[in-house]
Amino acid sequence: DRLRITLPGGGRVLSLAEVEIFSDLQPGDPLTLSGRNIARGGTAQQTSTRSGAPKGNQAILAIDGIDNGVFSNRSVTHTNSETDPAWIVDMGSTLNVDNIRIAERSDGCCENRLSNFTVAVLDDAMNPVWTETITTGIPNSSHDLHIPVDFGTEGQFVAVQLNGTGTLELAEVEVFGGEKMNFARSPEASAFQSSTRIGSGGNEAQFAIDGNTDGIFGNGSVTHTMTEDDPFWQVDLGQ
Image (cartoon, rainbow, N blue to C red; front, side):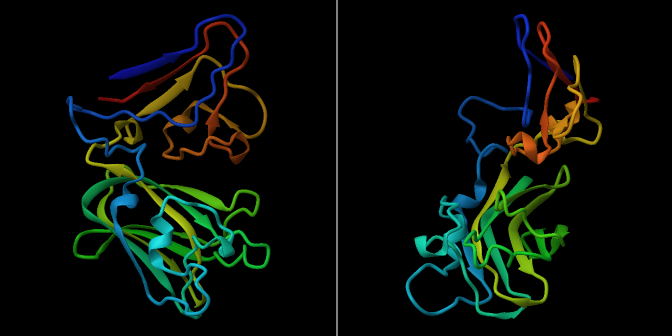
């Protein structure tokens, strides 16, 4: 019920973005794990589609695997200006959902349009089973946001809705999950490491099991030990 990662050698630093643990894997199992974007195999719709020059706009562009947020590069969705515009992806079956990454439009003119929006996981009857509202928008420096989902959440659909009147414009929506459950996300799981670097930007052992796979240290979700001999990180699954 424990997993330890050790970096052997002298004067080394162990730094991890995320550790995921899956149970009951068998040879030949499909790789629909938390490290894979299960939205790529889905179908997408939105409440409306902006008409005009062929520069994108369609709902499918948020699951095409291209997170370039420059609208003229033709891989950004765009609704009409309306009340509560929404986008939704159907993943085809009920799956575990571990975390979601949303990339916004990044043109200088329009990079702040994705603000005060709600992300939801819905079951096969379109009932919400998990929701989170983001009121502060997405940091302009990264133009994307990693959103951990509660452990054990299962759903067939993931939706993004802008709250209020405006246009919904998405560069990419990635949904990480699958048929296997990431037991490192269990509420009973706890993590520790051989030492913790002092300073800003994250560092704590728990960040490797927070559901956030963002490996950019400045975004505050990466572990970091001191420089030492044989640094290690460990998770206790509590089972």
